[in-house]
Image 1 (cartoon, rainbow, N blue to C red):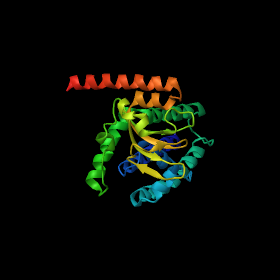
Image 2 (spheres, rainbow, N blue to C red):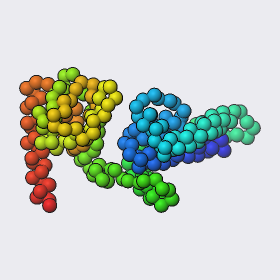
Image 3 (tube, one colour):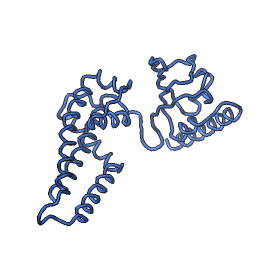
Image 4 (cartoon, rainbow, N blue to C red):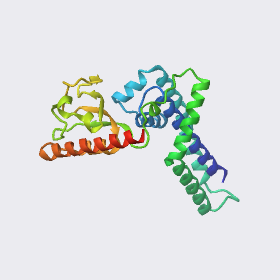
Length: 252
């Protein structure tokens, strides 16, 4: 039974390490999704050659975090494999095979629940952020709080396709701000990045645009297509945004 418990403990440790590393990278300016992906990639030793990976490697603090993850990952994976093999080798006076499987699945189920829990994630984020601020010289900024990324608001990336409503139009023509959507930046197909784009900038197919706004508005914009229907949906979205502003003004 000890090898089974060892497997569970190592997995818990691995999850904590990757979560802490991801939170640390978030505080260097990465988005949560990017930070989680890069942390898990480094810990498991799976390499991805992407612009995001380059942004991690070219940043000195992120690079140190990745190196530590790779070190812990190599040790953790070897420990899990060896403990797993030992757990199911036939031994004298060992627990029945069924009990071992039950304990393993129960332990993994608890870990999975904790990993998916927003409450656990929120609490861990606060604890790790305080620890980073207190014990390191890392420039800790809670970008989620600064941008009010809670409730109905978030920052997201939107990939532009040829038949999208926003494709081949200037920001002035789109008037996304009237829908309550702000364009923070544009990643071009050639790798160039346009921060705080001006009104005369044209949104092109294959662009990736970084947007800030209400979740419902962002999701509606993502599926909106060219044509009269798309124009009508824009007008409806503008009217809905006016109602949201009116409600917020009354609350103030």
